Image 1 (cartoon, helix red, strand yellow):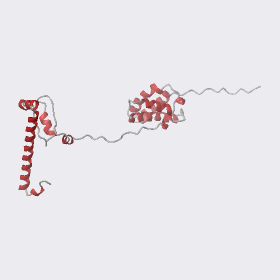
Image 2 (image 1 turned 135 degrees about the vertical axis):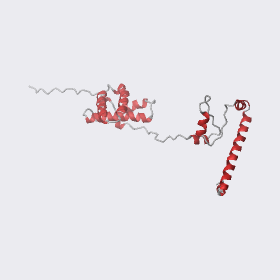
Image 3 (image 1 turned 120 degrees about the vertical axis):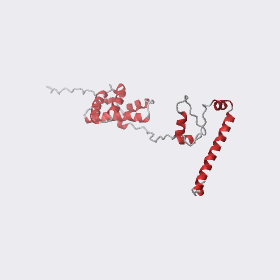
Image 4 (image 1 turned 135 degrees about the horizontal axis):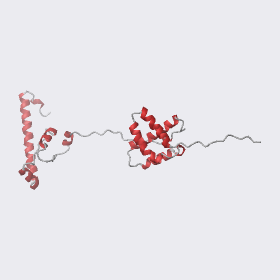
Length: 205
C-alpha cells in the first residue's frame, strides 16, 4: 500500500500591482518623495500592473522604457528608479527574490548648468534693441532702468516714426551721429573731471 504524499499547492502568483501598492504605502509613511512616486506608479500600473513578477525581466523593463521617447532621460531614470524601489520593498516583504530593474542601465543625464544672460550682456551683443508696447505703459522708464548706459530714440514722435519707416538710412545715420556726439560729450566731461581731480593720467587706461 502506497503512502499518500501531502498535496503540493501551486504558489499564488504575485502581481506587480500588489507590490506597487505595498511600496506606495511604505513611501507614504517614510519618504518625502511619495507624491512623485505615486505619480510615476500611476503611469506604470497600466503597463505592468497585471503581470506576475516572474514575467517581469530586465529586458521587458528596458523594452518599455525604450518606447518612452516622449520622456527626458532624467524622467526615464526616475521611472527605472521607481520600479527598482518597488521590487526592493517586495524583497523585504518576502514577495520577490530579485530586483530586475537593477540590471537596467541608467541613461546618462545632461547635468550642465544653464545660465541666463543679463540684460546688460544681451545688450552688448546687439547693436540695436527694440522695445515695443502700447502707449503710456512705461516703455521709456523700463528702458532707462534696464539699459542706463544706452542712448534711445522714441518712435512715439510722429516725425521720428515717419522717417524710420520711409528713410531708414537717413534715420540710422542721424541717430548714429547723435549717439557719437553724446558719447564724445560724456567722454569730454569725464576727462575734464579727472583732470580737475588731478587724475588725468588714468584716462584711457
